[in-house]
Image (cartoon, rainbow, N blue to C red; front, side, top):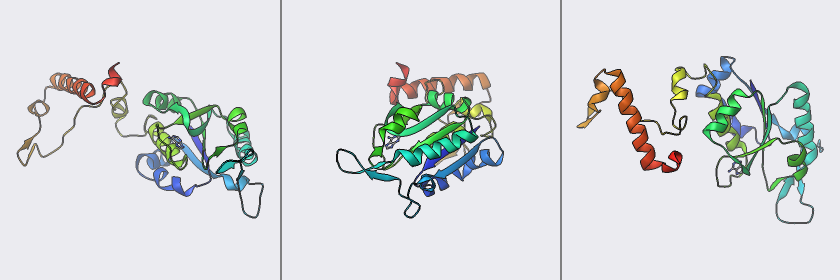
Amino acid sequence: MRIDIVTVLPELLESPLNHSIVKRAQDKGLIEIEVHNLREYSNDPKHHRVDDYAFGGGAGMVMQVEPIFRAITALKEKYAYEEVIYTSPDGEKFSQPLANRLSIGGNLLILCGHYKGIDQRVRDHLITKEISIGDYVLTGGELAAAVMTDAIIRLIPGAIGDEQSALSDSFQDNLLAPPVYTRPAEFNGWKVPDILLSGHERKIQEWQLQQSIERTQRLRPDLLD
Ligand code: ADE
């Protein structure tokens, strides 16, 4: 699987994609991620501009169709994509089920939005899916692309050490994860629940499920609807 990200700010993606599990997954060859600078596809060889004034007026610049068309076409000539995604607050809300689906679907191309928006013709003709990471407006789509890439990569078998643990994440069964503890068993008078020290695997699992249900009812009752 590969993820290509097209952006005017590649620097913003350097750190999130080059540490921890996301980096290890690339080092292990489980995924290839490439960040492409949209400015390299500019019409303007001198200033590498990729935006222009909006027809009809209005504040803010609009990302031009041509550089985006060239970037996406060049990538599509090399790779087949399952989805060409545009990050936008208008899009489908990103969620664990969507991350699951994108993690098994094949290559992804993510176009990061910026400025006031992109020429509508890009959305009409080149994008197959618009995704929002939440009901708020970011200055650009790079952080949204980093969030989605992270959530997708950790689901690829082998990306995290213990394969079970991606499946037992919060949200995988619409339940929040149960509380976890590590040594020491007592600190400052604060004790780890006895059941977790008991060694009864079945009882521990029952307790964890109960905790997950209670936590979900208390913190995210909407997940149980
Ligand atoms: N770009 C700006 N805001 C965004 C959001 N909430 N999700 C995805 N992309 C965005």
